[in-house]
Image (cartoon, rainbow, N blue to C red; front, top):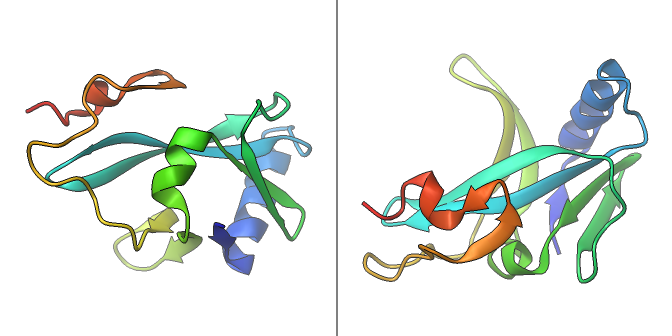
Length: 122
């Protein structure tokens, strides 16, 4: 399960409304992994969830995650951060990232590229 904070849901609904896509979902995925931890992708998704996708809903916001990414995101929290240094979505992931030398390089996750594109193949 992925927890969505109320503030993250409210901000997502606001952003989707401003983009003229109030019925769209937010998709999150693992964009890379390596010694520095996981790197995440987050975007607007207007398609129906794919086979095996997990969908989580809070406060009118729907979050969709593909099965491969969910394996690494299960137990995470999607939050909204708004402080002096940052403003935006933050994924709080309690799951350990791959050890050095065991990254996901070359594994395709069905998004805009492969895991290696995110720089995990240093």
